Length: 435
Image (cartoon, rainbow, N blue to C red; front, side, top):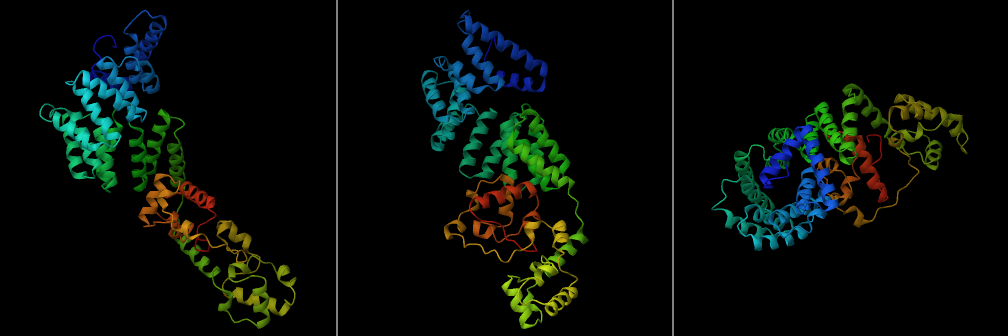
């Protein structure tokens, strides 16, 4: 182990074994620790190469690049150095190292295929495809060849053709995690939820599991109201990466959805009450004196009125007992009474009660036209916006909280983040009794 061949395929198989067997992982960790000591005392001239490969195996890519930066004269050193850089999202640096290595060893399939990936990731899709054409005759039986070809096709938005290439890669290597993940994601993006779940589940069983596969799988399970399965996915992510921010956020949201109790009759009753509370006072026959007093107190809807007590109304100039009786009779017709706002705030969020005497400034037209895609929102919130066909901020602020929460897979955590993003622009969602 790390003593003989350092061929990429063998190292990938070892990596899979490491993540499925804790004993193997501990053994690799011990070997890497021993090599670190040899590098420190200079007793093994080939130790740095082996150390860098060991770091790559363990997912310590920054350490791997550091150890291998002086080993790029060797093909294996250049290959694993580039792989470490690619995992750090440094394709430009990887490209430089790989082009130098390929110039010295042009027949290396692994080097040339890694060069394809580097070109693809810096946006040189044409060059990547030219290299693949050169490899086509000799490497049609290699899963990685079809995977990279699929990635290039996907970059060109040729999704059906990409899916065919990923399928070929998976046929040649049923445990090709990257091809399985890409296939799952393609089905996910195209709304083929059943197929997406099938491939994400296949990806889940492989080692190491893609974190993004578990996150996406959890979101799909939430879409089908399978909250317990979604929670399990997010917890698996957090076991591997305890501080993962998206997994923490989505877990909280899924737990809230699982514990949510939905009573259809109660919701209908609540919505009916909200409609009543939105009724303008001008819809009722009132004396001129009562109407003028309510207008001066900025009371425009029944909801504003139930926030007031008898004492508060009587304290207002020109508002007497006759007007009070008139108001109480009007409210009684609708099953309401003065001073019942506290009860309403217990039943509905306080923010849902309108305050008519606060007038909002008109937001800037440029802000209203800002695309929702530019807001700092989690993926699930943006997905909900797409389902509601909301394109810009102006459309978004016409929505109420309850309208958003009624959208599948849009929970309280997503709502809180959305409100926070709007508040940063001095905006808020539509506020009324049906919100």
